[in-house]
Length: 228
Image (cartoon, rainbow, N blue to C red):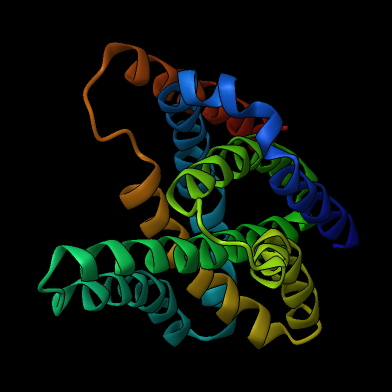
């Protein structure tokens, strides 16, 4: 469990040094995101959903509502934020605020998932690669979107979001019902994030190829782990 916190700390450090990777990431961002999406989709459907289902069936069937709540909550927040925008100025301001909020929430969830999944070390280590790619890519995108922010407190809060998620997951793990419930809710949120923000929207052959590579490689590793 605590190794997950150490990995989350490393991801937080990647956020602060992401400027080093600007040139490379801007050029290959669609490939990196597609590779990460393939890895995450495999982990969600082959490892996380079955594990949550097993634990929910052993504890309380009503826990199955929580992944749905996590998915719907993220969608509702995003839809509400854009509902009443009337001018381009409002759109620009809301766009900036939404990306800052989305960055914090998404990386909080990354830290949370990374920590609770460390009960199976193979999964956490597999998650670590796409989460590194996501952290670097999203940090650079945030720098591009929010060039005007000079708040050190805001930068510290955003950079620490992954670590805060990991610490929260560790605290929740001491109560089984909290652990399983939060696992389900965060899992639903992660499914929304992957399907809405990470899956390649454009049908480029290179992006699709990297998605398939991540999907097949990770699926093979997880299936081998399950058999052994």
